[in-house]
Length: 525
Image (cartoon, rainbow, N blue to C red; front, side, top):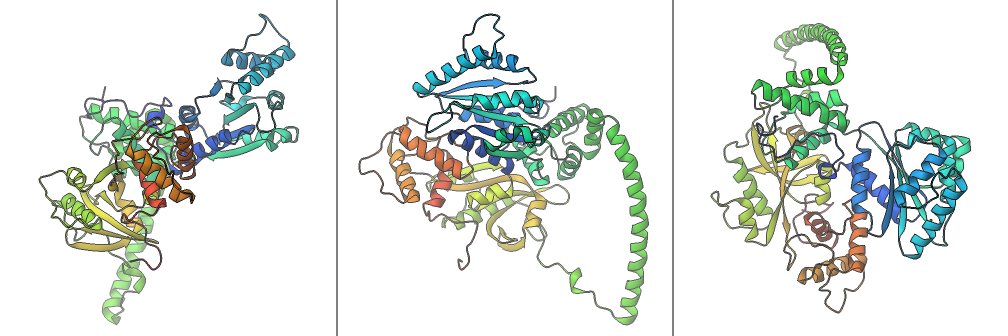
């Protein structure tokens, strides 16, 4: 209903676990990396836990897209089953034949074991994924453990991923399940998003749906974070209702009052009780404000009569944003500063799109919505879109980070500010520049050919401390794909073997690129 009104191509806040909309926060990246590590290590059990709505299922769907092509998957969504029902379901998922009407556990297990041996002989791995695994009884869990007893000298023939709520970890701590717990080779608990990640999450999903303007101002995002407690499913429900309410009101942006009404529809009485708490809190604040005002008047009087100077703790230790920075044409000023960091001395041209200008120097733009931690991992200066206290947009070039201090440039102004000041005014929008490899014509997929493959082999050789291939590697073959996947996994990237801008930037960083860096090491200028 509101899609066309806000200029969106899709509904951005569906609660369906669509990997296309997976916002990879630091915790989601780590969760996926742990699952992939568990799969690639060829051991028995992998465990992923998290509260309801934190994104466990979405991470799992993303995992399915990354599994090797030689994988046979049994996916059980609701494992609240008896042992016989579970064994029959595993057979059904894997296409294992068994006698009609069979009720013998032994027949099921024998057939599964036979299937696993045949699959291994054909070079295929078998993975069993159990969602909502906290619903499994201890007896069923023990039976599942016994299925992993079949193994070769190198690997288990059945790998099991258990996904469930936090009580699953508590269940596995029982004495009777200690053998199963000892077989868990990788585990991860998925927590809620931070305030900054909530803003990035909302911006990311809107961007994926085709959104190109600010719909949720900072004050509304603050309210969203408090109401959702950082749980992605709650964020989706609240944002969906809030967009609908804003559409009905004919407004351009979601305000805090509309978000509160959306929460009333989602949570029912929760918001009402919160309002009562807010009323008490407001009364206390009024009393405190009165006391502060009285104290302030008293000290002002003393300052006048006794010439008391304000203490140093009341002064700002670093400049704030955006006072003094230009609003008009701030975007052009910011890109001009970014180009200077890359050694581009040619005057910035306002009538030509910045990314088009960058292309003439062998550079490309990477645009995204993310958090500061992930931007730091890319380690490149970037143009950031910030917002002042009235919600107005302005741009700066973030050119350097040292500990808790950030250097930003706009116009002829260079300023050092607290990193917290950046985070306060930034909703995750950034643009940075990266070097285009020779022969690069877009993402490099397995099976690709060309000069870019030689560059890829050269970068990996430098990182691994080996000699690059003497013969030209014009083919992106399985061996090189495997090396790239391992490297991506080590860097917290999506280990899909596709070499896109993020992988190129990480490779350049690791191989010693001369590109300007965001982080300055001790002694660097």
